[in-house]
Length: 281
Image (cartoon, rainbow, N blue to C red; front, side, top):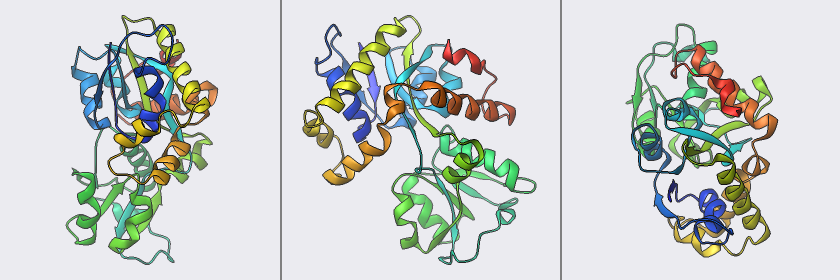
C-alpha cells in the first residue's frame, strides 16, 4: 500500500508504528516523503497513492478520488501564520488598510495559511489586497525587508525569527481565527482512496497514534532521521504542538473547524464548490 507524508517530526511520529509493522493486521507500506505542497498536487492529479497527508485547504481538489480520514492529521492552537511588513516597531498597531492594493508574497495558494489570509483580508482590507505573489518560503522575509514586496505571509519557525529581518506583524492570523471562531486551525488532513475501507484505515491510524503515545522513545531514531538536522528538543516541541487530541480523532470541534474554514472559503470563491457536510459521512 502506498502512503505519502512529510518528513516533519509530527508525521513521522504518528506514522512510525503503522509503516514499521507495529500495528497488527496492516499491509506493508511503501512510503513517499514529500513536502505538503507536493502532496497537495499529488492528491489532485495522482492515481497511485492510497493514503496521503495534504493541507485542508487543498481538500476540495482531492475529493473526487479521496475521502477524509477523521484522524492522523494536524489541527492546532497558537500556531497561526503571520502577515509581516517592513519596520521593526510593533508598539503602534499596524493598519490593515495599508495593504489595500498592495503586493503580498505567499508560500502557496493551496494552504490553510493562504485561506486564512484571504478570509481575513476580505473583512479587514478595504478593496482587498492587490497582487498575490507566490515565492519560496525562505525568500519571503528578505523580500519584505528589501522592499521588493509590500507584505509577506509566513509560517512555522518564521514566528520566532522575523524580528531578525527588521520586520513587524500586521496580524497574527491564528489569533484572528481563534478569536473569531473559537476553533483550532485546520492544518494537515489525512486522505484515503475512496475504493479503500475507510473504517479500517481509521483504526490502523488511531492504533499507530496510540502506539506513538504509549512508546514515545520507539520512534525517536526514525523521527530524527527525517528531521533535517533539527535539534531533538525542537523536534519534541514540534510533536507536542501538532500531535494532540485532534490527531487521535477530529471530534466535533475538529470537524467544526474544517467545515467552517471550507464553508467560508467556498463563499469567497477561494476553493471549488463542495458538499462540506459530506466530509463527515
